[in-house]
Length: 76
Image 1 (tube, one colour):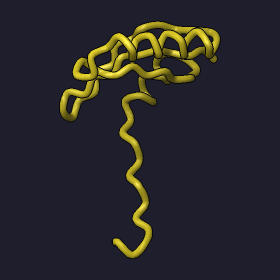
Image 2 (cartoon, one colour; image 1 turned 180 degrees about the vertical axis):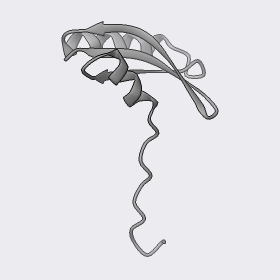
Image 3 (spheres, rainbow, N blue to C red; image 1 turned 90 degrees about the vertical axis):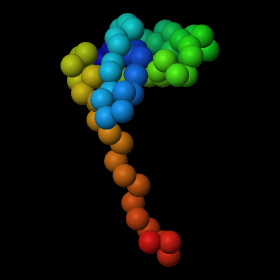
Image 4 (cartoon, rainbow, N blue to C red; image 1 turned 120 degrees about the vertical axis):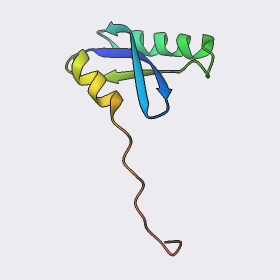
């Protein structure tokens, strides 16, 4: 499975994904993401790398909202 690199731009409730590239090996993808993060303006978006079967699966995973944290302890 390849590594996919995207720029993720949050526009309120909508998340826009810009495909940057596809890499066969982790070191190549990691170096590309690190270079993008070093040169990027945080207001434009953030760079993400994901490991998936194909581009459609990668975009689906990146489009999902993170699961809410569990409510545990005396504070709740």
